[in-house]
Amino acid sequence: MSISVPDKVWWKPIDKEEKIWLFLAIIWMAISFLWMPIYHFIGKQNPSNESYRVTREQWDTLTDDFIKKYQVKDASGNLVTMNDIPVVHPPAGSDVYLEGRAWKWWPVLELEKGKTYRVHLSAVDFQHGLSIYPLNINYMALPGYDYIITMTPTTSGEFPILCNEFCGIGHHTMVGKLIVK
Ligand SMILES: [Cu+2]
Image (cartoon, rainbow, N blue to C red):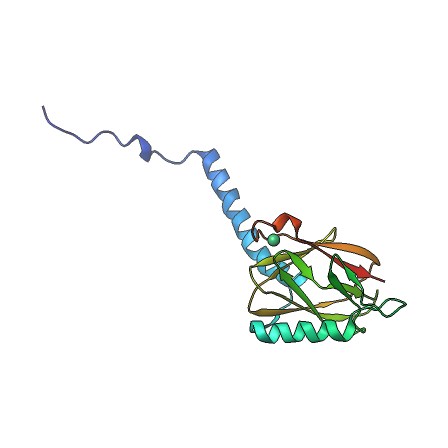
């Protein structure tokens, strides 16, 4: 009686079918791998790469000044709001500020169709996700960062802005508005 090594049943040559599948998997991996950089150049959906560090104080000054300057007034000169959020109509081509905070998008923006704006996006408390419904536009709003999106609205209408990044107990109520005229 002695202890001996069992036959190496797992060391049989690879079956032909398994070889085919392995070959197809490797080819598919190579195509996917190459497609990533190719689509980066031809896909036309790369996010903006312009962003700056911003302190809470700087950001508050920028947004407050922006709102004071361009908040919409009604016929009798009263400042217009929607759900206590100021409605702002900045001039075409200008710098526009949009802030995510618990739990609203601040302010309501009124933009003109066909005009280009530099939209500065940031958050002041948690990470929020800017989602312009029902368009396929999704960006992160991060505290401490001023993220700039150059935007030219091509469709007029009223677009709800949702938050698509879970940001706490009021996340599901976080709705803003973008108006294109
Ligand atoms: Cu959220």
